[in-house]
Image 1 (spheres, rainbow, N blue to C red):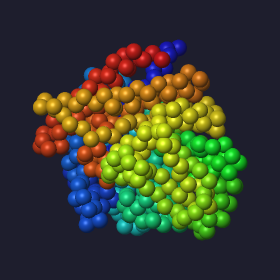
Image 2: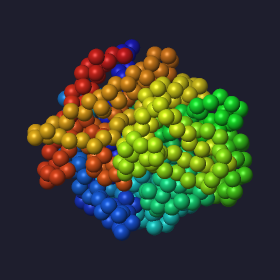
Image 3: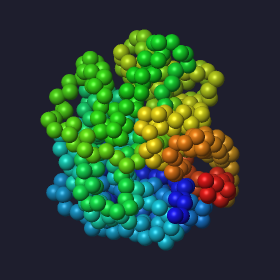
Length: 472
Ligand code: BGP
């Protein structure tokens, strides 16, 4: 039997790169609505962004020429089911057919996420992730996608990063609907779990030979700088809060009783759990895990203060001791800790490559041999191109090289890692950080109406690295 090829590629998300926000029958989503509203104080939108909608052929060709054999992207829900009446927009399906044709042309394996933050606005108006019907609407949309694309898509993902998404929407409040409300956080989190279970149920009905379904999770491993009983407990709570509620139901089919009790003790009203839900969760687990790897979850025991979180500080970190840092306090659970020996990026996030190894080892310890794709890993930077648009992004190359080194070490030690996706193959919109924070291997000139693409130094580095590691 031919050895299965390791997948090397890049990842994007619909709202961040497609543009064409109201073209060919697409409905608005909660990000269109937020970006067009006064709540968006920067005034920056992704109405055009990288214009992937019109540049997909060029982008996919560049991926192929860069040696990449897989591409992770997301489908825009509101392109497929634009309105509450559930009528399917054929032009939306046709767009993704064209994207898949292009992938086929180069033998690029598509890895497709059903929702990457961008709920349709009509779901948003009913309460978004808090709407009781959100999981049924999602299951309907998912079944439309599964029926249309079938096993042309071998890797489906239900939701991108439930924990990061819920936290930004309802804890930090930097993503729509911009709330700081832990009751809503928990309700949103629970509905996301139900969305995955119900979408998996639709997927199983079709018996799509050769196609698999997974979930993409973002939080890394939890660790503490000290090894006291209190620190060990903080690590446990850190995992329960950031990892277990997403991964236990999706992979094992249940929440641990201890988690439910701890949430109840924290004063959360759990009446959103409906009879029969746990049977649906138990019967509908995923085939693989998509693990995004950016940083670890460094914690210490909870001491004082109300629950709060900070993330993505608009590039204000200048390295000084009082610069904003990413982290959270969860009352009665844990607090984030800071390691003075580990550098932070401009957005206050640790740059700590060994977390890639530790995260993957932890996943194996808890979830056994489940196939894992590293579905995102990347480094945001402010960048200056030369007069030809070329960027020498050595800092990004170092970052990727070190992280990939740790990922391959975990693979060598038995973690079932089957693929790696750099965030991102080209520059795109970075949510509330707009366009100045860049992640791409290919520069996109956002000032240019034609959105000229220019490969950066990292693009060529990645190409060579893949050549040397094609047959791992
Ligand atoms: C992940 C998201 C992506 C992407 C990336 C970088 O959490 O899945 O959508 O944006 O992080 O984050 P940011 O753009 O906020 O720096």
